[in-house]
Image (cartoon, rainbow, N blue to C red; front, side, top):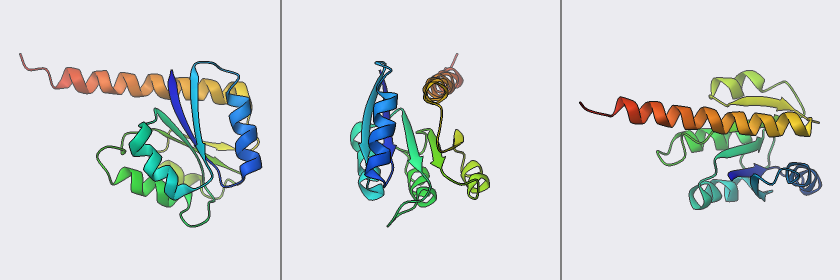
Length: 135
């Protein structure tokens, strides 16, 4: 199972995203409309991937990504930014997001993106483990 945390302040849109991604039974979906709560969730559930809306009240997606990067436990969680605008794409990519996806998105492409994101993370973890082997 791939644990996915979806963060979008629009509860209607959040439900649509959850519903579309739930079509893949290999994804375990968690969600919240509150970016500060999402930060706490990142520690509690240790998601494999976070899908994060860029524009959020209280704490925007860019700011939340910076917070996640500042902590050892959450800095390596891949983030896929989701936005209705290309405006913040460069900032998102500069923060090391895995991908910047415009709304509305294609469900199958998003599911493939999540899977590829997780595979990349596993490969990265294996490389780190190999690098730490002492002969």
